[in-house]
Length: 395
Image 1 (cartoon, helix red, strand yellow):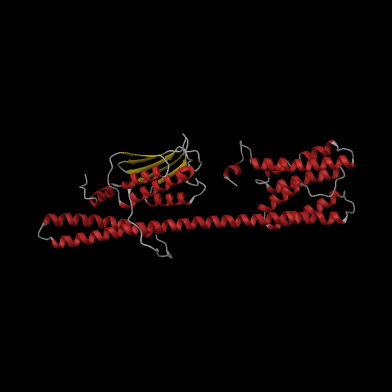
Image 2 (cartoon, helix red, strand yellow):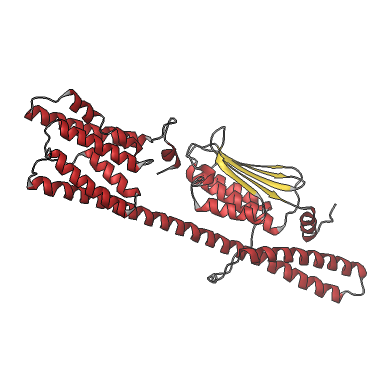
């Protein structure tokens, strides 16, 4: 059941499905009552007609107030049974009420309700006279069958919810393993650079300028590697299984053009715009930018619809990098994959942004389509170190 169904529709405390179930079950019982009284009594009384007509009304509250709902249904059923002679039956309204209660209430409450339902049904349908064997057997058997079905559905729903949580946990674990692997590659690159720079400085001790440049690069690589190693330790988990194959070199923000070209070739017209002065980003941050755009465009191709278009906007600010991906499709989830309610792609995107202390916003855009917006903070020290890594002199 979705959040909209829980809140109801048009401001009412029940959902559209609740209304349909209440009307359908009430009509079934009303038609049965009218047909029986027409054959046996020649017609129904006004009171009997009204009681049968409104017998399904309490079902509107079967999700929000199951126990009061069931009590109201039982009272209306007793009134209908005692007003006029009725056949031995277990009506649709009573069936839905008992089933709905069994789905959400504890077993002891369900058993007690089932017993009360059986006794009350037998006594009132026989007008407190000695009931026949058909009434004695039919009511308890029907109550047991309906309540058992409700309990079985409740258990199945709990198992589905547990499996869904397990899949979400596995998705988080897999994404963190992948992040850890990527960070490991980046840190290994820095350590290799530090080793080469140290060896170059030792081999050129006679040339102070060469030694100075090598030591600057060495210092920058060391600071950046230390920061990324700390991030790596934050996301690593005990018990991770080793990778079956070595990973490929990791991309960054400079590779967004390749993603856009791939998206166009896959059938989604995509436009890339860059605002602000482009500058080198720390490898982990550049990788996060790349993965966010990659995931958003992939989901846009899946969900936005065949006639959709997408835009990718990368904004360089003084203290942050902002990534925005939007489609104008009508497929519902769009760039967000499964939307806010779920989706492993969205989980991975949030994990990556949270790793850098950023903020991720996903949802329908006011002008149509779906939008993904990520703001990733960037300090002056990180910018300077990234420029040194790219062989540029910080401003």
